[in-house]
Length: 256
Image (cartoon, rainbow, N blue to C red; front, side):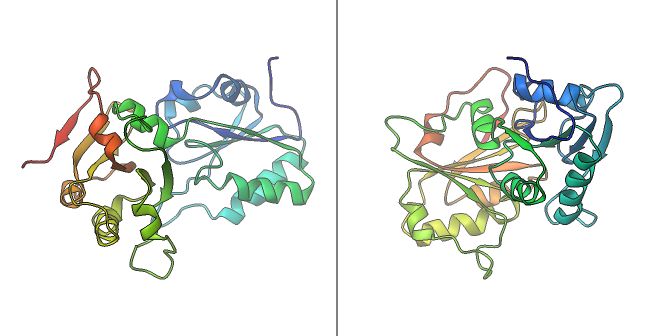
């Protein structure tokens, strides 16, 4: 069944991990047929070109630690306001709406306001970036679990409530929004029992032409990642050692 955006409905759509052609078919149909598109700052300009010719594009960029990021309350109000005005609304989010994307919060606001909505899943950054880097997110011989973890908060701050001991016992970890804290996260995991030889990688601008993969281990990944400036995921575990280099990929290994 072909789904197109309906008047008065908000669609929380995952744009995928970066590359414009990694959005889902349903997500693309909603994007092309919506009256209004509220999009994240990191959504590909190429993907925005697929919006309908008469669609209103509204940037509601939220960039970590950046002055001028749109407040979540402002986004919530806009979603409700446009829907109540009879517009079909595509809320276009990077990755998957409900994996560190505040899709759950926006869905709660819409439900409370009586606004109909639909969640259109997307390829989350962990899956997309790891695939593009040739790193299997899971592997039968490299453990039976993987955890997706926010790395937004400074590990030494009271805002960080992660159980480092529990995380150190999980075979595979992928940290989102961790660029500023790679070294501290590695240290916390090491202090909690994870071997310093545990393979680790940082994938910058995953799935995009500028993608860069830094490969090392827990003891040196911190200094390897000091010049990372783009969006990135931080991967820890034996799955990194199971990586298979892909054609055209750019990987940099630690100097031993």
